Image 1 (tube, rainbow, N blue to C red):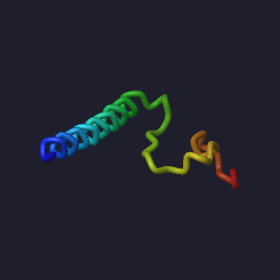
Image 2: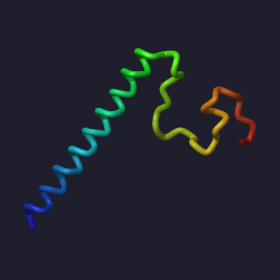
Image 3: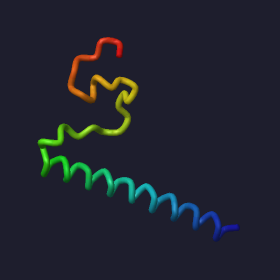
Length: 60
């Protein structure tokens, strides 16, 4: 039982560390390729598609 809990904790920590690594890779890619557009952090309003295309949102 304890081994299963520890394994779960380690897997979750590795998953979160991997996600942070992916975000860092994306930031570096965006910094080296500015023609691709701005870096968009997670947690933004993904329902509004006009914001992603740099237009003013008016109740998308």
